[in-house]
Length: 470
Image 1 (cartoon, rainbow, N blue to C red):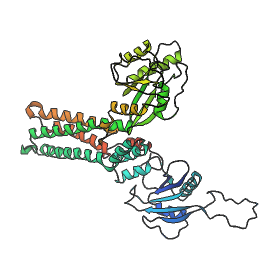
Image 2 (image 1 turned 120 degrees about the horizontal axis):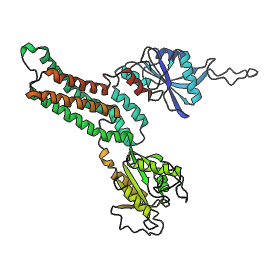
Image 3 (image 1 turned 135 degrees about the horizontal axis):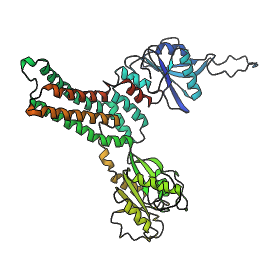
Image 4 (image 1 turned 180 degrees about the vertical axis):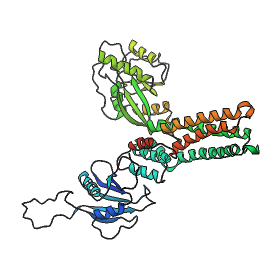
């Protein structure tokens, strides 16, 4: 991705498909000029004023409805579509450049024709995320906020959307800026001591230095601890549904997913692979996993499915162990209970619409009774899942949620810990230079989080994940 901002870019800013309105966005130094070459309005667009106009038709635009042999005396249509044009002048626009947005009817054919006209008038098709990249390069937002834009677009639950919007509003930026400011002050004083050794004066005493580093370590650790919740909100949790064949795992999966995603038959071993679906559990994104029934088998395909089920048990956040309460507990049920004993789990008694024949005495843990057929108890099960996943602990607003940010904070924490060790070494008599190196490394990590110091290839990777038009 080229980071040049000297050209003017264009793209459809609304999602693919048909809709009532579609928006084509222009941004760059010639956005106004290109817009005026596109529209029929002669007078200049007024800043932040919606102007009704038309997009001109050229030879490369939409074809007219006239045929070469038409005898109609009516003139062909003079425009592609009627649009509302809005100018957002620099620097007070999304990108920090001149931006013009053309709101047309939401037909893909119409929007593509407008983009094509803009390109012929001097614009270039935008790369994925290039509008937000320009906002970052022009100082409108920092890298934390830019990444929050993508998270907000991708949010599938209200909790994800709120966490992303908080980051967009600057909660993460302020947290990192506070740490960076403390480090900057500490580094400046240490550098002053190093620069004027003949004065034999410490601009920060060793005891004060150690306390300041301890404070930085505590704040960074708190951010990292908080980041676990943030990452769970961003990436979601995983819940596996396990049990012996034919206890109703797939039926329960379909009910919780709200769609017939898994095949349900009376034949044991129907599910041969892991089937997944993203669902909303109390505002938290949860990936449900329907697994192959746990049993011994000679079928190589089913055996692979059983192996995948066992592997899934080691990584999921919660296991729903499904038992058929209309039958007595079997040796296979007992085997499943043993194999999941080390997991965080809920025991689900399925088929409550049938006569109960299950002795619950051996089940030392609490159970949840449901019927996948009548859906009785399913609402209670969802609440139990939320409680087991401790969704209430995710309600507080985390400052950090991104894996890249967490890795950089870990790096900063390691550097701060080394700096503290150097500050306390040899009875606090070591030169400030030994501490400075690690403090500067820690600050570089904080600056990479916010984007003040970040390599171009990382920027290209981050913004390539965005959709075109954003």
